Image (cartoon, rainbow, N blue to C red; front, side):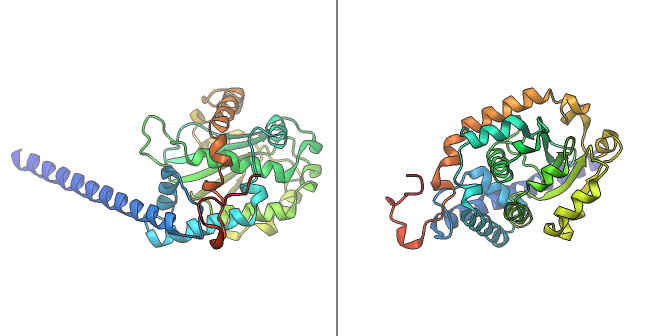
Length: 301
């Protein structure tokens, strides 16, 4: 008995030591990355620690690959400032988007530690869709989520990936005709090359009978790798439950995460709380080298 007990203690001690070593390595790497970030003229002045951790985890702790991902992220942001920088969650464009559509990070994590987000129409009138403004709102919600703990009860736990649910109820070809190709290209490119979390799955629910026509429009802009992540649920919500726990879904989707209205209120509250962060150029704007002098921010005049 004592021999077995001793082995368990030894194994436990070894495991704990390995974890401590990994934690020290992570802290060392994050400190190195933060210093690199601050000195890199291709990047903004500031980054939230939690966002930096997400980049690092997305690249499985590889410092060099993390640096590449960060540079691509901010390069694309600054190439498309109308989507990623010139924004305000309380302006008229944003209010128009949030009045007709829901962009909702859902509470909790899946058993695989994936974060789930839901996107759906509240109003099906196609003329209320403004693709570029709606995409900007999507990235505002995402940027807020990336600096918010995935599990408030255990802020050290980070999601291992992203699952997106698009509810296609009410979607018509009139909606598809309002897509802006340049915006769609930028959105897909950012998701594929620059997102600070790994995209694990995209679920399309309540798919219409003319789904093939919709797919034919957007597929040319989606890489084969990403297209393989898409699952189309054409019959019922039951097939979605095989991938996303019902407890994480809103009540309107047969789940136990509260009503859409409650989740909407929480998301809007988070956006307001992070408004200064979203609009602070220090976090997003890459200055030209000759303008890095500490008093040259003129992005928002």
